[in-house]
Image (spheres, rainbow, N blue to C red):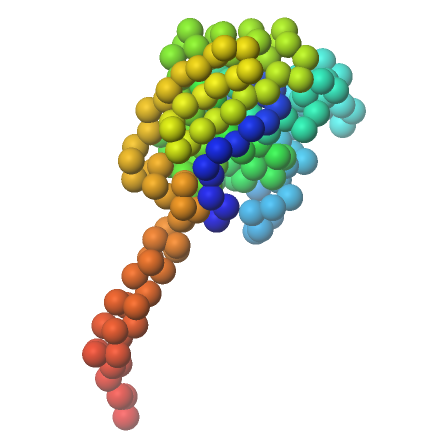
Length: 200
């Protein structure tokens, strides 16, 4: 898993609340068995019409937000079902983090397991960042996980809360397998001392 330490990138605003996982990645696209390839279906029902043509009014189709790696969204982002594909779609599209005033717990947990950062700020702070992203061309932010803070080049600065264990895992790129492999030597020693019984 790729470590998350300090990330600087362009910001895209998604001024909607209660964005659920079926809106992030609709259920008809969950047939793949890999973690990749879901980005093309991100926010599909908003990005495309019933005829499959792009909706030019949707924020991610506006040229000024091309290549955005940080998404700002309204409260209760990632609600709905527990599908991990929602995180995979956001990451595969190119996002490294989402900033909101609140997240669904399961979505936040899935994000951590995939090296994807959820940044929780106050509603006022999110509203200010949304305003800047909508009003300033090529608006960019720096998310510094080492300092647990968000800042821009126009004077914005805010700290965000994050669990120490989650922060440790993200900084070091550790998913569940990585955490287990930190104890590889102890596991090997235990297995050597407890050989499997011979079945005859």
